Length: 236
Image (cartoon, rainbow, N blue to C red):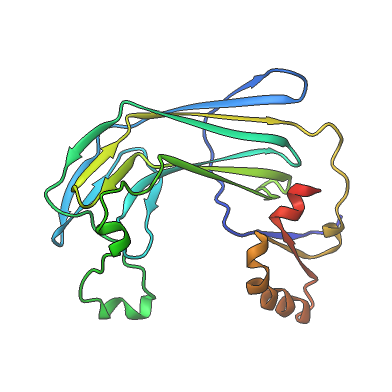
């Protein structure tokens, strides 16, 4: 079998402990309970930074508040159907802040020395609404995992802290209960036409135009390359 390299755009693979349950034939359910301590507030450069033990990274959109998040990515059988994610939040608390939450500064490394201050996005900082809007989000992707097995990725993002800038207040969650359910495919996975290529680039369809130059470049260099959208893979 030809060796192949897969690029999955926008998918982060992590590990975690889950409880797997079986209901009807082919139907599976995984549950995960997460607990967090109250956030730690640290003053820095005239702003405050929010830290939560147990989170994996930060939500850092340009000029918007930097907040801790936890990302959990599941790997389920390719072509699974009826994929549903439910997330309940419990032990919600609130805290008043003395300063605004620091905004993210996203600049090229070549311009880091030119930074003179922070910029805040008025859409967020001039609002009483909590940011982000919800306590969690999720998206689906497809591709090869680290064992070269084609799977469906379910990426769940939990936001244990939400911030209301105009009220200078945060809400924080003491825990999350995540439940993932899906139906496994009933037929074995068939060989894919993508197996005839050296490289397959997998991304949402909206990125195809932006990635076409890369596909063309690889093909001209003798690396047989194919773009395949996540939507097409999930529809197969």
